[in-house]
Amino acid sequence: MNTTTDSLGHEIVSFDDEPLILVDEQDNEVGFLPKAEAHVGGGTLHRAFSLFVFNAEGELLLQQRATAKRLWGQFWSNTCCSHPRRGETMDIAIHRRLKEELGFECRFDYLFKFQYQAQFDETGAEHELCWVYAGRSDVAPLVNANEISAVRYIAPDALDAEIVAKPEQFTPWFKIEWARIRAQHAGVYARQPVASLA
Image (cartoon, rainbow, N blue to C red; front, top):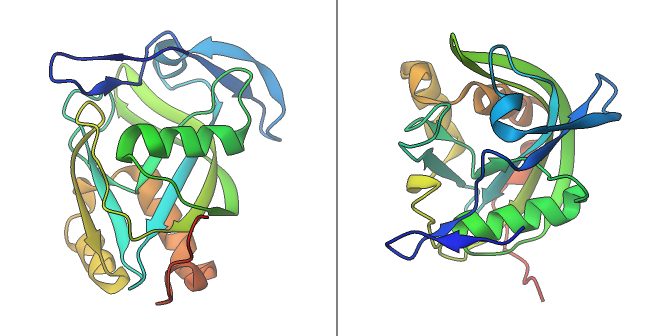
């Protein structure tokens, strides 16, 4: 899919008509639906991914979703999340989207996948079977302002405290994923040197 830029030169990478991959509860493809339609009402179950990128200190790169986002605009969330498009493998999709939103590349390890439904308002929701990945990078992000309002790094203990104090400021899928990472995948945020991508 070709991309265009806005008046400020930021790449436009999200399109309401891009076809998402519909799946059943076993993650088998069952069809396709434009992104806007897949999020109407209670949502139609579709394939998605969430990326968690940590620096050498084990701090997580958070993003604050752009104000213009139809669902959960201005909420804080994990490093990057989106959907593979029709005909696109998950591996291609995760690297494409990280580059589009944050301007860098890194290696990822698959952690787990899970299904959730989260209602934003009466007319829109997320209903996803989401693949979760973790990676490492100390590269400074180059933010695409069409997708992201702000970014910051945060240590795991500080993030836990923020989620407890202000849970309403974080996206629902991120809170589910972070709880599982803390419980089952602590190694992904242990302090360690960041390996070169080369």
